Picture 1 (tube, helix red, strand yellow):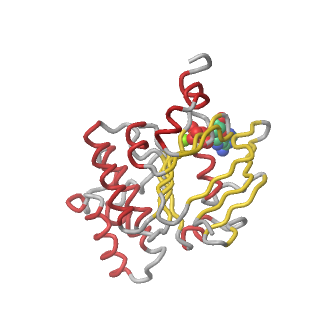
Picture 2 (picture 1 turned 90 degrees about the vertical axis):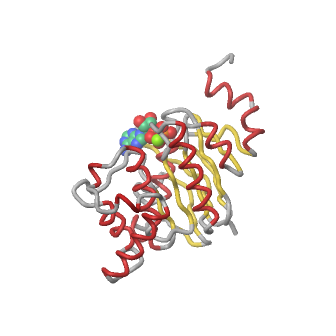
Picture 3 (picture 1 turned 135 degrees about the horizontal axis):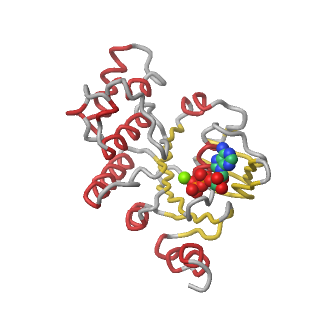
Length: 238
Ligand SMILES: Nc1ncnc2c1ncn2[C@@H]1O[C@H](COP(=O)(O)OP(=O)(O)O)[C@@H](O)[C@H]1O
Ligand SMILES: [Mg+2]
């Protein structure tokens, strides 16, 4: 049994088919990369898996149980958390309070949630900014905060949506290290990323989406040589 199993998933928005007959699995302990040009349907896949949109068709199961019909918070409580491509912290709350919101998914008491959130902030390298208002954080720190909010829910599987977008090379390397640290702690990951060198380095397996359809899957080095994948990125005739 795979940790996450998506079968024959389609998502239509009116006349637009954003995702079409898509299959995906993540095994326990795996880091799977999901790549594809802008508009390929990657974020839509996350939105459907995490319960923000119902699928038009298809099946999604996590640890053997169907997720269909469950609300996002219920899916999160089962151990599947996600970040948002457009980071949306509670701007007026402190970094610590933002992470506590995630912690309350698992922990009922304020003191315990505060302790748990503090540990997660230390893990993501934001311990020194715990009392800063979320709105005052740099983009790189807001990306860390976004990861911390997901981690605070104690996920078994974490979906990361472009957490490196807009970061400089040094910040990208730091986030790669952080993702490896999260993985070493036993969290499986499904990662959308445009920074190629990062996703190649991190992923055990890559899946390529183009116009809502899977056009490639396999070990990163193999996928990078695939003709259809190269054409999707560079245009026909590349
Ligand atoms: N809520 C929505 N309503 C209508 N169209 C949407 C919605 N979300 C995404 N789309 C469309 O679905 C397609 C895939 O978008 P998205 O999943 O965001 O792609 P990616 O994350 O790969 O860049 C795009 O054409 C986008 O405009
Ligand atoms: Mg996206």
